[in-house]
Image (cartoon, rainbow, N blue to C red):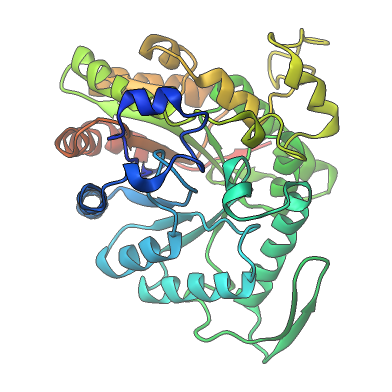
Length: 407
């Protein structure tokens, strides 16, 4: 199993009364509440944590979000360039440029190829669908977002692997008369591709394409449902089975010297759920096109729809929870509740290892674990202490788990 470190570089230093009055802490919160000097310190600390990961052998994740206290990483290519140059050993996952929102996927492919060359082939490319407040921040039409997402990915892939001179692209959303990037990527035909999604329709397409599917804070039921759709789509398309290396899970995680210390400090990660997810309805459930028509009635439900039929293995037959609904269900969780839902792994080295392995067994295995190891008011020192303990006491046991074929 490969281990990855994820820190969205949040900005928690906004007065609580301001946050209480705001209808959304993303997109519309005035940036006068962001002190550039404090932001500079946060960037320095986060980049130092990534450099520590390079020493410890933990791969790093550079994310991108718009725009608010949840993350200062609104410009993924800049962070990616720094990591490509400054790290020396670990792999770097761009998770990722908001591909459906950028006007020119060819430019994005150039950025990826450049980072892959600078890092000498240590880049993984992750695609996220975007949504919510990112639609407003980018003046985007959410109704056509999925179409743009897949067409942009197709154009990025062709741009990265085409080596026979200029080609042209005449798509529904993108037109390019002359594509011929220099340099081409270090890895051939292109770096490994990831996609972060949990809805079965998108996951099925990710499966048919053979990309790594990463589930973020989805818990057991959502993860099993998504990966079942992935495998089923490949089988129906006559494609061969994949290994656990095609599946990744991202969860809040912290290791302390004792179980009590790990839970106490790890509970600070819940700031991400309880504070930074607050969004106005126009960015969430009422965003046009954000929810497939068959899921629209769930917007008005206050309780989950009862299962149509039971399937304990795959979760099939249960109502599908959209990403927005999943987010809404995470707000207000205690540490104990988050651990029970398996979106927080916290405790001593032994208890965290056991929590991860329980989840690994329950969902049928995965090849990548992304640990969201710092958020909210967790300090830089606490984050580094948790990383060192994880690398020394937990990671060696996880890395002994080899990939295996999953049917």
